[in-house]
Image 1 (cartoon, rainbow, N blue to C red):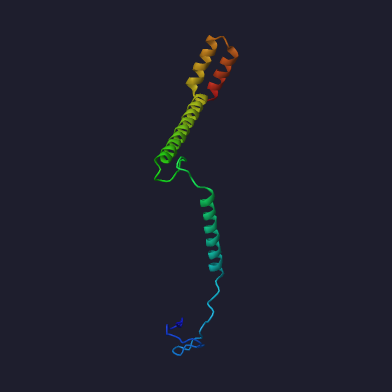
Image 2: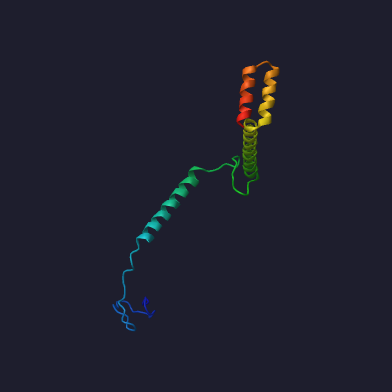
Length: 132
């Protein structure tokens, strides 16, 4: 055993270091964090072992691990689809918002309504064009 203060080799049964006089600590400091950490590690290892035993993946199943090309292709396809859908929603919303607030669009819709002899709708379009 060594002295924690000066590093001097100590004989078994010594209470004080003969070199520096520091009291020898026979029982190490208790650290609650270390004990909790070890318990969590053991519990996590047991959980991982039970998952491995219970959830064996057959070779037919698709995995998302980097070595699996099918998994990567599926994930990439899903991401591309999500991006395309998001762009479509933004474009649709922008066009709709433009039409609702566009003077020219409201006037053209009013003229179409007049041609169809739907005067109530034409009045609504013309009134809406005046507000914008």
